[in-house]
Image (cartoon, rainbow, N blue to C red; front, side):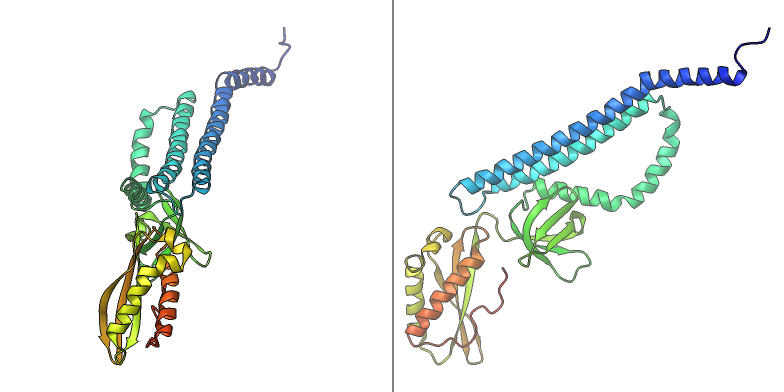
Length: 300
């Protein structure tokens, strides 16, 4: 008696049964794991953004003119924690999927060692970036909102700007012209933080050698004493009264005097501009003409 089903039909039924069983027992678990990982990563990103937004709103709602060092560091740490959490979640899901698929991990040791060695040579720059970023954040070299100047390997021009984002791999700076530098942390050989705790405004004042230096010093001392009263915004930006350091250098026909003032972090350039206005006005009223531009080179 001939079978009602052909061999091809029987094989097709068996294949469909095994496929259906695999989909129910393993495929569904894999899909649920992937969906759960995607939802968890989105939740981590949302939580990090919420923390960052709360820190931003807390600063804007306060009467502080600059961010505190703790706030800068918390914002950087929140970004790093979210990045690391998503990476660890991806690794855990990959391991779980490997277990569900019954992939023999022991047989992958040899190929994994070869591939790991090859990737090690190619990814050593990535590892260097991650390690450098780790020490930048743990040592609190700079954080979100800091004004920094970074010297980089192979770059003839230093990157100067405000830190907009710092992760384990890269640092993003916004320049005064609105441009964004993305600097790999492993390329940074020197970081100069211009807004750490406090800053100093330096104003060099060139006067002709024929001028009466005693009179010039008297005028500049009056500027220092009256700086806060003459310019209301300086009251909040200055940490103490400006002071005259004396003669900084002597050139042909010119004597350079230096005025310095401690300011809030990152506000030294604004204070310097306001002090120059007062110095020019005071010297003009006293009949002293500056021999050149006062601090001709200035960074934002």
